[in-house]
Length: 61
Image 1 (tube, one colour):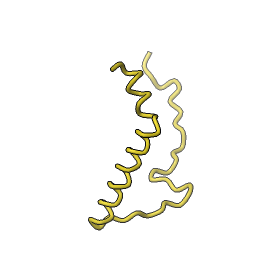
Image 2 (cartoon, helix red, strand yellow):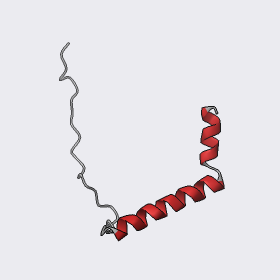
Image 3 (spheres, rainbow, N blue to C red):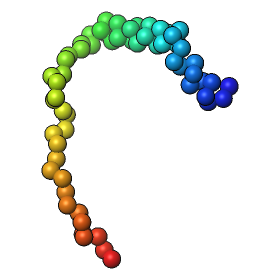
């Protein structure tokens, strides 16, 4: 198979259904082992935005 054919197979309804089933099974297994899912509030980030740095003219010639 060439790469284009493989990419087309990923987006078939059957392939998507299989991927959804795998994801659902993985989530269920995670939860059974004591894992939990928590909702992250909208707009919250792990790393806050930084002030832009001005590096213009700092390099060597």
